[in-house]
Image (cartoon, rainbow, N blue to C red):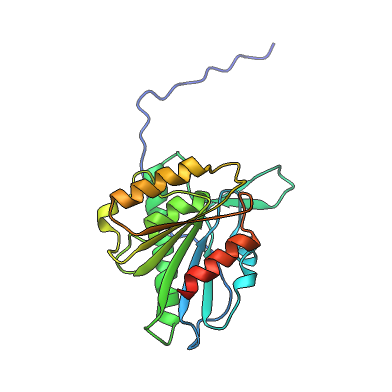
Length: 227
C-alpha cells in the first residue's frame, strides 16, 4: 500500500527580491540617421509582439520617421503550447515591480535610440494601443525622454498615473474605432473629461473600425505627426 505523503505548510515563508539582468528585444522601422525628424514609439497591446505590431504601421513608412516598437517583458503562450509566444506589459502579480522593471527597460531603449540620432532636433511621440496605452502614459512621465504627444489608441491612461510629473507641453490624442468591442464612446468621453480636468490639451479622433490598428486609424496618426 502506497504511503500517504504529508505536505508541510511553510507558515513563516519568507519573500525576498533580487534584481537581475535580462535580455529584451525591440524593433525599428529603419536605422537612426540624419533624416529622422520624428521618433514614434509604439507600445503593443495584450498578447501581441513587437515585430508584428511594428508591421501594422508599415503604411506610415517615410525617411523622416523612425518607428520604435519595444516588446513587453512578460512572455506566455496565448492559445496553446504549439502557438507562437506572446507578450504582455504587466500582470497584477508583483504589479509595482513589473511597472518599475518595464519603465527602466523602456527608458534605456529610448535613450539608446536618442543617442544614436545625429540630430538633437527630433520630436518624440508615444503611441500606446489597448493595454499598451497605460504603459505609454507612464513612459511619457519620464523627464529625460521629452515626449510632446501621447496617442492613446483604443485605450486609456493608467488609473494611478502621476499627472503632476507629465511634461507641460504634452498633447493627448484619443483614437478609437466606432465598432470597438472594448472601448465605448462614453468611456472615451470620460477619459477626455479626466484629461481636461488635469489641464492638458486633448483631442478625440473616432474612425470607422474595430479594436485594432486599421488604415483609417493610421491616417489619423499620420495627420497628428504632420501637425
